Length: 93
Image 1: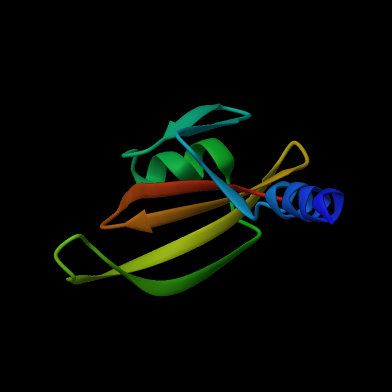
Image 2: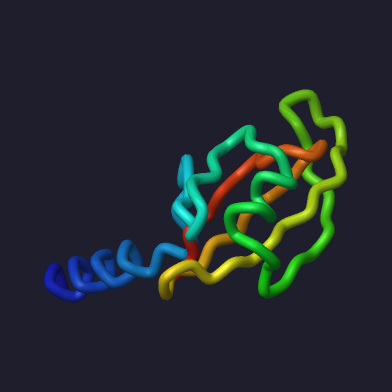
């Protein structure tokens, strides 16, 4: 029974969906948190897909956001833009 619980715990920890990143390296440089949307397009080009949604800040206020999906050297990234700047970078499995 202990072995089963250990195996289950290891499997669940290996199934992480996304890891938050600070920067992404593209063909023409780096983009990092706080960079503008135009800098993102200059460095990484056109995204594979995008979707619009709403996020809430620490005070509960809603802010419109857009998340762009990129594939960079066989790695997938979801980059969220809020108020024209990079708010979050997630590396996805």
